[in-house]
Every structure is written in structure tokens, then in C-alpha cells.
Image: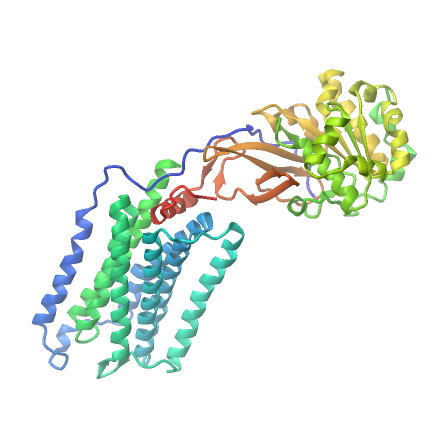
Length: 294
Length: 284
């Protein structure tokens, strides 16, 4: 039973809230330092491709693949940062109902969840193909969502959902993504999905097609958000554009890799990890702007 | 003048109250969202206060409570007003599609337009309302507003008189709803200062909040004795059909203290949305 409340707070009738904080810094210049790694990593991939011997001649001294290291790094730099992006995009979507944000969140969730599931699964003996299949497919899904989101933003055609729809639609979408990841992981483990990687042979044409499409779509979405970033001078968008660009470069490296753990493969991975760090900086920019206005 | 204490312990008091406490019966307002906030409605025969500054819709809420009671739940009601003439009330109600004259013809409602001093006279409530109560057997009553009593009694006596009137209504099996106009800026403070919040079992506060340079209306249930209730501040609008309570102000903190701001997470999400959207100021 409730108690008598004699200590009711003493509010004032009116209150004032300042204009919503903007993320647009007048006179802001893009960080050159942040953009420098992009050409450097492309150059490194080219150089390694020239100097490294073919897969058959690649000695074990040129390979570095300790167990679980890749999984730990993917979890920290890609999955956790992606989950943060998915969370903040969800909160933004609930505020505005913009489908762009729901797509961004879904992309991040797909990228983060397939990365964590796939890389840890790849450490189980005999499940390397399943792990690679999951990560690469997640990359493709994420790139499709990102490109759709970027296209909608660029054309200013983003539909907005009514407040009553937002919770249920976001729940449906996010659960749908997670269900897809779980279903695809099981299907890969049961060998129901055509192989992406065959031990002793290397990547299959299917993987080449999937990773190639992902890299191209990540690059396209990076271009779309980059264009928007330079027209709106948004710090958040700038780092997001670079993150997508680094992810794209990281995926491109897969084409040139001789074997898992070789210098090209690590160059690609580090590019993706740096992409993850850039996603984090994008979120941090939003938090900093919030600090300035709250 | 009858002292409040003299009525407690009388056979009528015992008849009305013993065995009724905690029976869980609810008096629905008929405003679905508000009833949800109240976990089904006001507690039966609880004294309810609707407090708020001018223009917040206290009278509208009181009238809707009576009209919904009569139309939706078959519960007759009495509207006692000290501030408006009946014609004004009928006209204002018509704007919301409420035909008070028809409800009066059907013996589902009475509009009593009177002076507070009549109610304050010795046995005034019985003389003023006794016949109507016998005739109508109402379940609901709205008094609009208690502030008018202040003009006739000292500040010290106001609480005593209000208590006497509320007890009279309750002992007749009626759920009273009283309107209290709080001064701009100090609404619930004024309620507590006058000792009014202690008198009532349920206090609903209506207030203005300024968000994004627009004035919005917010409703909060400050207290509800003997029942759980929604503690969140909810936005409401007065539509051509009456009260429309909508979503809680979940994105904001500090609404009650007068310094509303988004939480850090919400502000971050807002910045995120602004960066990715071209409709940069469009927010719900």
C-alpha cells in the first residue's frame, strides 16, 4: 500500500530547454591525420602484393596466426564498436523514426554480431570455413544496409516512421538481424552453405564474389556519407565516412592475401580494426557535442 | 458550521467506510491512457485533486471525468462550479461534443452554479447538494474550484473547510474530484503549502513545459494513496474530443525542476540523428 506523500517536490510550472545540440562545428576542418592511413594501407597492400611470394612459396615465418588473437581483436575493435553504433543508432531512430538510422543500426549489428560469432567459431578445429562464411556474409549484409542508408540520406528520401511504430519495428529489425546471424551460423556449421574457404586450396569463387561485393558496397557507402559529410561539415559523418573506407580497404586486402596470417591479411585486418576505432571516434564526437550542450 | 471531527464516527461515516477500504474498486476517468497511468482508474471514493495553472485544462478534465462517467459507465455526476455560469459551461462542453443539457435531462448530470459562501454555511453542503444527491444518486462529483473558498475563509480555515466538504461527499458514496488552480511557477508547491495535498488521496498535476521553443502540456500523478501508479511525466493535449494523453517525456530530465534537458545518451542520439539526417530539426 502506498504511503501518504507529504514531501512532494517543488517544481516550477515552466521550464526552458535549449535548442537540440548540433553536431556541426562551424569552421571545422577535417582531420588530415585521420585520413592519412587510408592511402597508406592501400599502398601497403600493393607493396606486399608485389614483394610477397605466391601461396605455395610462402614460408611459415611470414605467417603469424596465434589461436584466438584474431577473435579477440575482432571482438574488441569491430564487434564492441559496432554494438555501440547499433545502440546509438537505435536511440536516434526511436527519437526521429528515420529509416536511415534503423538501417545504420542494423548494419552495425550485423557486422558486429557476425564478426564475434565467426571469428570465435573459426578457432574451433574444422570450423574455419564456417567462421569465414559467417564473417564475410555479415560483411555483405552490413554493406548492403550501409549503402541503402547512404543512398536514402543522399537523396533526402528517408522515410520516417510514426512514434507508435518505432519500438515494434526496431525490435523486429534488430531481432531479425540476430535471428539471421544465428540461423546462418547453424547453416554454416551444418555445411548447408556452399564453402567460402577450403583448406589447402584457398578461397572459393563464392567468397571472392561476396567479399568483392562487400568491399565495393562499403566503398560506395563511404563515398555517399563522405559527400554528405563535406556538405554538412559534420565531424560525426567524417569519422563514419573514414570508418567505412577503412573497412572497405580491409576487405579488399582479402583478394591479395596468400594465406591467413600473412602480412597482407594482417594489413587488411588492421585496416578494419582502425575502421572500428573510427566508428568509436564518430560516437565520441556525438558524445562530446552532447556534453557541450547538456 | 459542522466541524469535520463531528462527522467522523457517526453511523453514516461507519456505514459508508467500514468494509470498503481496500476493496480495490476503481473509478475510471474514461481517458484510456490516464486510466492506465492510474492502474485502472481512481480508487473508489478517493478525493482527487487536479492541480495546475490557468489554461492547463483542469476544468476540461473535470468535465470529461463526469461526461465519461455518465456516458460510458452509467455513473451520474454533479458539477459544482463557483466560477462559470451554466451557459458558459454548456457552450464550452459543446465544443468537445459533450451535450450536458441532454445528460441533465436524462438525470445523469447536474450542473450546480453557486457561490462558495453558500457551501461554507453551517450545513451548507447538505442544503445545496442534499436534494440533488438523493435524486441523482451520483457516483462522481467535481468541485471547480477549491480556490474560491479562499475568498471566504482564512488561510488557516481553508484546509478544515475543504476537509469537511470532501468528507461530506465521500460519506455519500461519491468520488470527489476537486480543481485547484496553482500559481504559475509554484503550482504543486502552492498545493503543498496550503496543506491541500495532504487532504486528498490522489493528486494529479497539470503543468506547462517549454521544450524546443514550444509550450507543451505535461501531466503527472504526484500521489495516489493505496495504489501503484505511473510516476512518469506524460505529454497531453486538449483535442476537439477532450484529453489526449500521449507518451512520457522519456528523453528529458529535469522537467519538474524547471531545467529540462535531454539525458547525455538522448543528447548523443540526437546529435547522431542530426548528423545522418537532412531534416535536421525534425524530432518528435
